[in-house]
Amino acid sequence: MTSVLAIDQGTTSSRAIIYDAALNTLGVGQHPFEQHYPKPGWVEHDPEEIWQTTLRAIEDALRAAGIGGQQLAAIGITNQRETVVAWHKDSGKSFGNAIVWQDRRTSPICQQLKSQGLEPTVTEKTGLVLDPYFSASKIQWILENNTDARQAANEDKLLVGTIDSWLVWKLTAGNDHLIEASNASRTLLLNLNAVDWDDELLSIFSIPRSVLPTIVDSSGEIAEARIAPLQGVAITGVAGDQQAALFGQTCFNPGEAKCTYGTGCFLLTNVGTKPVPSNSRLLSTLAWKIGANVNYALEGSVFIGGALIQWLRDNLGIVENAAEIETLAASVADNGGVTLVPAFAGLGAPHWDAEARGTLLGITRGTTTAHIARAALEGMALQVADVIEAMRTDLSGELTTMRVDGGACVNNLLMQIQGDYSGLHIQRATNLESTALGAATLAGLGAGIWSSADALLGLWQAERTFSPSIEKEALTKVQSNWRRAIARAGAWAED
Ligand code: ADP
Image (cartoon, rainbow, N blue to C red; front, side):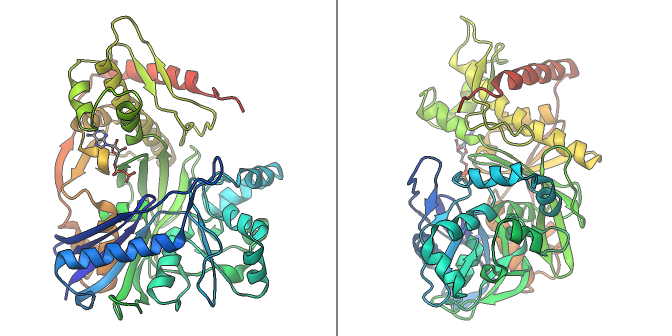
């Protein structure tokens, strides 16, 4: 009985993967669910649909693996972060839809708090910035705008949590109201050093402590499932998706970094047992907490990564599928002088320019779709290289390698360009399911399948390493062009 179920509850689909003790995949289930956009800038999910798709994914994975739930040794959960659910303590019914991390409705709340000069306090305590992205302003919004939720709060019947909280509540048939530490670190309510809710932050966002879940470890005895088909199986691992990927890539030591190339790109570096405040506009965040051991990370996100390739495919039609972009880009020796800044949704770390917009520069009569394809891959890699530079500044130690995962990291040219532009050895894992692997290994550790994290090191394998090979002069030229292009893309949109 050494199979582990990893639940991977993402932004667009709910997945379940069952692994054996050697981390071979035994069965997979996956169900997409609906995205709700009730108003411009609003993004919601139906919490009940999140749960039902998760449950069906679990059932499918068990069926595919040919085992029953009772044969599982442990359950691990990884989830979309920052998204908020509010529900009734007795009925378990949610108060409206979940407010998703992408939702911008609480921008005015954040602006107002900024105008009161509160951002430095918030950043110092949480490691984050005052932005609608995080959970606190979403909870405040629910308390101010959902009268049923407000009334329940007054009657001490309101429960609020992130997606891990919601799934644990459902899996335990309403027995446990918990939040795992890395998820808690994304709420803007957690004191990063104390790993506890912070009274001053609760007061800034007018949130009563009583509605919040109990903070628990990322690995260990967390809860026990009380519903079919998982009755009695222990939940022994939980982490937010990016932190789970960092763990799944076995980046256990300070200075070890991973980047996930999906729709966006998320780079996290393990910084060890003390949070590192960023002077370069990165986020300081909790990676995982296992007993008394707390590990922290620095994080930088790039909003448009693989989404750029989707745009080239769907909006410009220059390729029919994402894989073709590599062949097209490789058909020319260089970008022909073209630079593409993929600031379609503004620029994330370290630029943080919400008004920046996508920019295509240097077009001549000779420019072809191949040059644009190449400039697109370079634009993705250069955005990540900017985050890596910021990490180097904050860490004052040298980064040497970065492990990669996510749908776009299968692109060999992109990975070579990334190595060239960042001066890093890029290691691509054999198993690219880092997020689910992280949930499974945190759970397996918690259940005693592996005696220590060190036992996992041997299970991670590099499929290929891309080492920097660009000439210094060529690199300097690319970097200076990029800086000029970023400046031109900046502050473009008007309100
Ligand atoms: P997410 O989890 O964010 O949905 P995935 O990890 O599934 O993303 O990766 C999908 C993304 O990877 C898409 O945006 C797609 O355009 C991009 N992608 C897939 N294959 C390639 C490729 N060969 N080259 C570049 N990008 C790719």
